[in-house]
Amino acid sequence: MLLQSLDVFFDTSTLSDSSIWETYIREVADSDITPVHNWAHYTGQWSADAPRNERTDLYMKTIAALDSCDVAIFDITVPSMRIGHEITIALNRKIPVLVLLNKQKRKPDSLFLQVIPSSHLYIKNYSDAFDLLMQIRLFLRKYSEGVRKRLDVALDSDLHEYVSREAKRKGITQTEMMHRILKQ
Image (cartoon, rainbow, N blue to C red; front, side, top):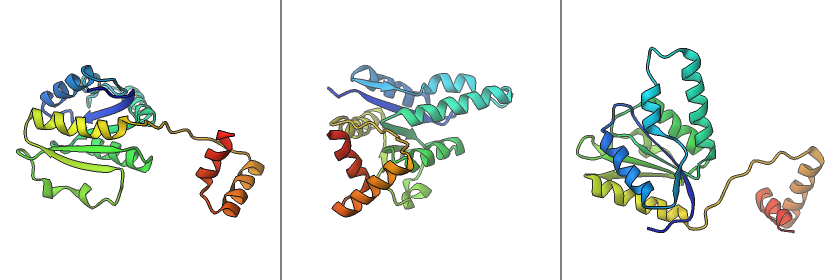
């Protein structure tokens, strides 16, 4: 499968079936995607008896990885507050999120996520490794064409006023106005 370069955040509960990770690794090996979060490394480091500063450092690295990704993929077959927190952060940052659920191990209709109104949230069920791989491929294909990178820009007050005024005058959003300015 040929994909444009895509930075992907993947995470699952530390109690999840490791075959999920192995399926994801096969997908990464067969495409041009870059994992920005090493879930396997995470499970080895996180423990209740780890010093607080190590857990804080790991949390900060996880959030930084989320900030740098194009898309995020989560398996929620095994419920996890940590994963729920990461999904919330990704959705708040308008990162496309694929949530996977093994329907043989958990009922899809029990998901709180189903009521979240977000055009960036995709909830998919799978029944085996092949089905899981297909869900991942379909999601990645959707976002690999024309990958867009997010860029946060701080404007001084004069430039912000100019962008706001011109966007209003032209009847466009401030984001579209910034696109026009940057294309000049």
